[in-house]
Length: 123
Image 1 (tube, rainbow, N blue to C red):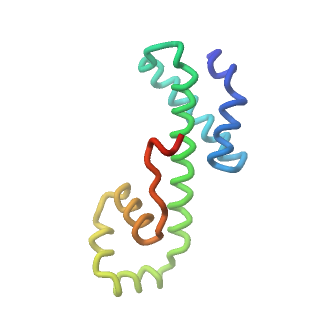
Image 2 (cartoon, rainbow, N blue to C red; image 1 turned 180 degrees about the vertical axis):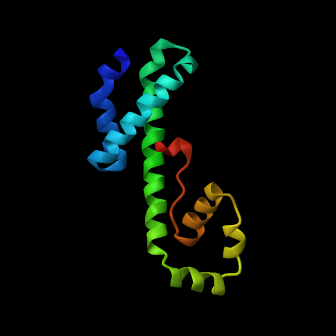
């Protein structure tokens, strides 16, 4: 519990730099706290507790950003665009049969031209 209180401002500041708004930053911090408490048994060294907590926070913040990107893409596609896409793109029906998590990645990367950032480049 002290870990959270000692780092709450740092957590918020880091989350805000990733999600770029107050509400999502607060959500990311809250989500990270819940995940940290749920996985506290996985923390092996107390000396690395802060970095462990911050990594959970970074992952939570990036999850929020990814979800927002998907929501933006979904909002941009109206019924006409979807119909036209199915008619003109023979691969889209195949992509739509994939699990949602894979489908989102394929759509964002190949269709919407979002960039791919490797795990080592995020931090």
